[in-house]
Length: 207
Image (cartoon, rainbow, N blue to C red; front, side, top):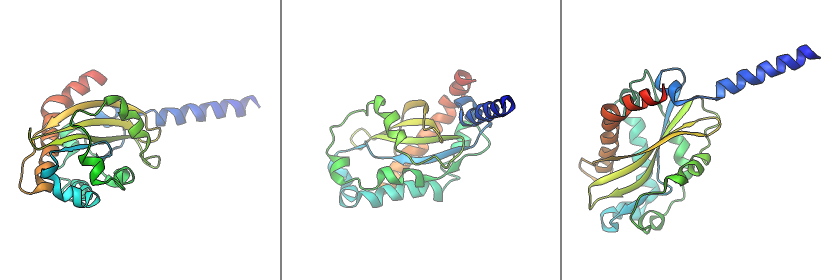
């Protein structure tokens, strides 16, 4: 009986260790890393006149932005930005929270920064339990055409438990032609900012 109890305790301890992925694990190539894409569920897009295609069919536009991260994974290279060996782009995980959003949801909110305190509850909605390691999501706070600025909460979380490991607000300048490419340019801008400024600071902080 004691041996069985001990074995069970060891198994539980090992299981907890496997599931207790950290920022240090992600930044030191010690676990799988998955970028799950862009979460628009609390996003604000301003001014309305600049986002007519989103107002007409928000689901289509959001899908185009997320699909681009997978279709052009070499361009949207999170592994390079973080200085790690590999990162999988799998945006199917955010489809559930983006599906059903209306133009009114995205275009009628008051301009301003998303409250960071909302982030943990947002992450809990992702169906990532079948994944491994650490997930990364860009939670869209705002696309502001007047200021030519996009703002995201770049958020790291445990794929199994969905516990938030770190979340940081990072802005990017949009560039490119056409609505899809223009705002996708803000994602590449954020990736460059991560590579140049944030990744080394994170590695030092979470080592």
